Amino acid sequence: MRHFEGFVQAIGSFGRDRSGNFAVLFGVVGSVLALGAGFAVNVSQLYNARSSLQGVVDAAVTSTARDLTTGVITEADANKSVQAFLDANSTAGILQADQIVLDKLTVDRTAMTVQADVHVDVGLYFPIFGLDSARRVTASTTALYSDKTVEVAMMLDVTGSMAGQKIKDLRTAAANAVDSFLGGQDPTKPRVRVAIVPYANSVNAGTLAASSVYVETKDSQRKQAPGNGDAQYAAGFTRPDNCATERKGTYQYSDAGPDVSMVNRDYLLSSFARQTNTAACPAAALKPLTADADALKNVIKNFVASGGTAGHIGVQWAWYMLSENWGSVMKASERPAKANPKKVAKIAILMTDGEFNLSYFDASTVGDVYNDAGKEPTRTAAKTLCAAMRDKGIEIFTIGFDLNEENAMATLQDCASPDTAKIKHFYQAADGAELNQAFQDIARNIETLTIAK
Image (cartoon, rainbow, N blue to C red):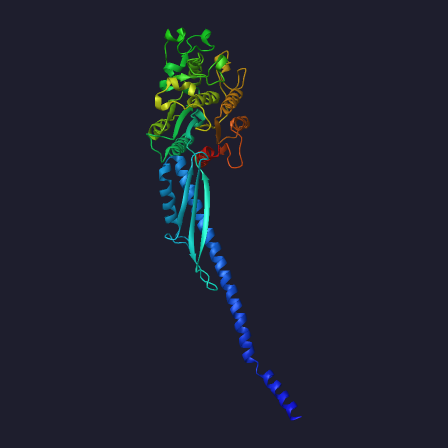
């Protein structure tokens, strides 16, 4: 009996002394919890490191591809460019500049891609079970670039309705657009060139007029103009100015060169200008393709608002500025490149503040010139020209400035190239700030197009 009582007491004593058991159990559970927490911290640390590293390499490769595209750097400079970007940006977050390693940079001229493979060794906050105290995190990014050249023709409205603040807004927006297109490149080896075509009652062809504009001196000459090598041209004629209206006849809606058919200076133009007390053609002459920003801005600063809206004539001359068929009458530096979608992007920007409302080619009298009094609405001629330009691979962007007239908006929408998921081609600007923004958006979109196509 005494043995049994002793056994019971021993059991009771064991039951009463529980503190040591819980201490052991808590120690085990605490260790497991600590390991779990440490593992979670490590996972979060590695995730953040990978995310940060990917963001840095994405930015480095995208920036380098853009610089290759714009000509700021050459392919030989690409490695240095990526490394400099990694060094400059890797200090963000938990990454340190001296930890990121550029393992490989590949510039593929066939695929037109830049690919960077990088890594960083991340020191873990909680090394576990004697495992390495650092883990390697890798990232890779590929971006497209382009070695295309870019030719941009800007058709700009300097008609009477642009007087006052609007012409000032246009001068500002157009000059800023020139800077955006041409900035950051070597002007002696330009990748981007820009042409300007101001238009109103007609287009001032400037120095090109002598070899490309046929001046009609009497009503019987209001027909298809001869080529600039034709005897009719060689015989000479009086040239009152450098104004040009639309081409007539077989080549009206083509970009055939002036050796095939010159562009007419319609016989009715002078009479129409006198009757409406407007300038026969803009004071500012067109400027063929150039990388000289100052030369382009000198044209822009001389914009004067006067005359009606012969928009199709502006469209026509914008096309000529991009057509290789017109190179024979231009200086070597102004000549458009041969059409090749893989090598050159040709862009037209058509801007107006009103309805296209006057034409000469189908008018019988001065009274028929204005307000669609002719046989064919001016907007129809413009849309026909736009369609022909698009068929030749020219990308067309259009801008309506303070535009409310239904036919005018429809014309610009019809002329514009089709929108894509990322790029729109028809813009409406209510004021100067929006006009400037439209040009800037188009400048960015054009860079995207050169890479995507």
